[in-house]
Image (cartoon, rainbow, N blue to C red; front, side, top):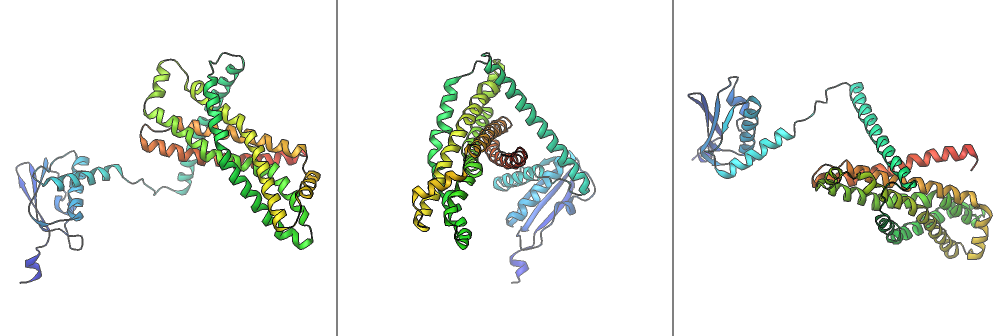
Amino acid sequence: MSASQETPAARALARVDGPVLEVSLDGSWRLGGATPRWRSVVGSEKPAGVRLRADGVTHWDTSLVVFVGEAKSWCTKAGVECDIAPLPEKMRLLGSEFARSLEAGTREDHAQSFLHEVGLATRHAWLQAGDFLGFIGECWLGAKRLVVGQSGFRWNDCLAEMQKCGAMALPIVSLISFLVGVTLAYSGAIVLRRFGGDIWVADLIGVSMTREMGAMMAGIVLAGRTGAAYAAEIGSMKANEEIDALTVLGISPVRFLVLPRVLAVGLMMPLLAMYANCMGILGGMAVAYAALDIPPPAYWIEMLTIVDFSDVTVGVIKSVVYGLIVGLSGCRRGLQAENNAAGVGKAATSAVVTAILFIIIADAIFAVIFNVVGL
């Protein structure tokens, strides 16, 4: 017996039954073989209805699911009724799911010119910037009401958030800052040892931690820890329609949810940055003593010759701004989240990316400003 007789080829036989185009499927539908496509079966005519039958199908896999899905998708777009009730239940369900994926996954037209794509991206970025500035303005108005005592601010919520983003963040800030100090000390020692300036490792660690790395590392840690948590919490509240309930009750979500969180992270960031400075200096001191034979008193005295109050002030100013960036980014992305579980996850991811991006931009701006003013 030949192979063709053992496994008959897949066929889709179309016949007109009144106003309905009935398509009978038979044979073996395999991905490795030749299978018909819906476009070749339906042709150019538009029937009043389509009915699919699979009485003669011996074997089938994804190729038949694709055929059924294409048929349903074509009928939906053409406004034609598609009857797949005669099909087996599993085939019917899989074909319907594939048709929905085709309708939901329609690809965008990327045939536009490069300038057109750039213009669309620029317009989207401009709208996003305007939306974020409007959010900052609303927070500013809420802060002014807080100063004059008219905001109905919930200090208990603020204190609870200060504990979450401050005291509970100490372990991870300690570890990362200490290791950053260790890394900087080892890296600096490679160069300084060539010139006999091992003791200058203290200067390198002191300046880099107080001016840059302390506030930067604390900000990045809080962006991934606190900013994502804010976005997830507020996004979940939006998905559960709690934000809408607050609005209906006449309670501003910004004053009730955003201000306590932003104020908490803004107040705790300078303290965390100072703590990160100490841990980074301690890490550098450990490397200096273990690898360079520099006693801790000598390390400390040398560091004080280069680090002064202006260096600490620069780090504190940066940390306050970084804290506000983390709080505002997390809360804003949470308020923009879609009303589903996937939207909450996207909001948390977007909050981290936004916070880190703006922290880097703010650091570059601070570098220019402090260079101009001589700090």
